[in-house]
Image (cartoon, rainbow, N blue to C red; front, side):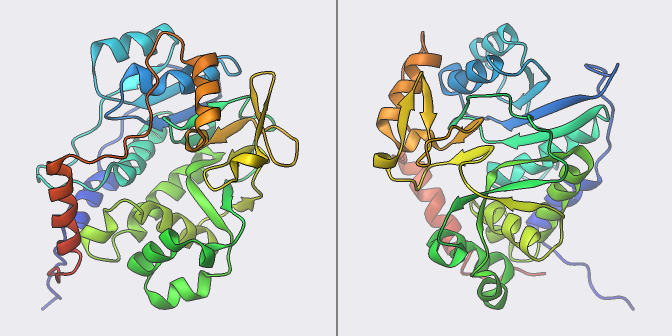
Length: 321
């Protein structure tokens, strides 16, 4: 008699995400093209204006965003030749992981449906601005980008979720490794598909409430890279991509409308610029004209606080597996 099947809300969701049917997109099929994918549910046109307009100033290729199907947003995206797809409903259960995990199932499906894609950038949307062609030079292998110079051990958030996803021993073993950010990852299509599926399956190790939580994506990304489960390199900060959320504002500047790194150089992609009010105002002035400035939504409604409390309690309870 075989062992009983594992029961987990996350396992039910991820099996549908990875093993679901795949079609083929005919949107661009005559030749190979690079591809940019982003997950932007819950956003309005004002939230994506800087991303879209700055991108289209330096890149004319295919872009697909997973978004809500709100008319003003769809009109704005269509104006800039950005394809919008609605978020998929992957299972009948009411349970869903956090959107930061849902996005990798969406990215997997979108890449699988687009065999013409060459190099793919998987990116955050609301806090990303483009300053030069993102695929110049083309990535020969997956590129992961350092966000903090102190290593994983110096980043409390990452260490918390490393312990939650991989356990105390794995977290300790990786503590001295570079702290890479899952919000911007780039590489050849086939490698990016494997990365998404590896990340999704790594998050199935702990209980659903941890594997599907905000932060599990970041932990799974670092585990996958540093344990050699996916190929790739940890590229230093301020190269192709500058991740500046933890960079001192005093070391950043502006020149000709572009963000200048502490070393005096500029990056093709700048991530987390909105953590710096002066930079956010400058980027909105250049790329967000016609839309109200949207600051990061730090406040939580009563229902959101209640949900967070419920999730916190659930993480402390055993899950039948």
